[in-house]
Length: 149
Image 1 (tube, helix red, strand yellow):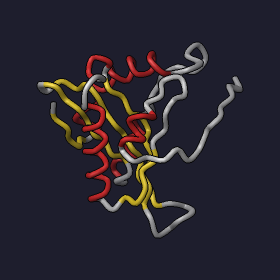
Image 2 (cartoon, one colour; image 1 turned 60 degrees about the horizontal axis):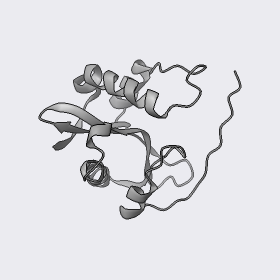
Image 3 (cartoon, helix red, strand yellow; image 1 turned 135 degrees about the vertical axis):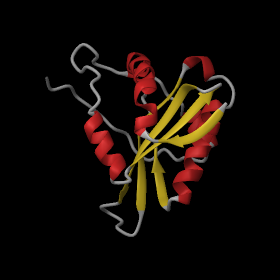
Image 4 (spheres, one colour; image 1 turned 180 degrees about the vertical axis):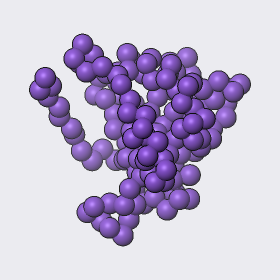
């Protein structure tokens, strides 16, 4: 297994198959809210240096990703924060250390880039809190949603 930081153009085709699997695995309200990534906005964010894509590959095949958006904090302007956008590891690779290694790799890269705080969202119906706690993350917030369409 290899872990690396990649650019959107390098993973664009491969990631779509995993995104579909990811969406089917975790998305709520699938009958009302369809998967339709705004690739142009992702590309714009990457050009601004705000999109960071970290991948896990097995024999060259994409099996996981951790995508973050990096911005200067509005509340703490002296610091840069990273917010995870999507995090997925193919179910065939979830036993073992692949997820842990992907997260550690991303943390190292983000830290080297000067990111002060990394925030990771989890779904309550597909939690991986134990992994995050072992990596030293703190549970700091809850988010509620309501479909309005």
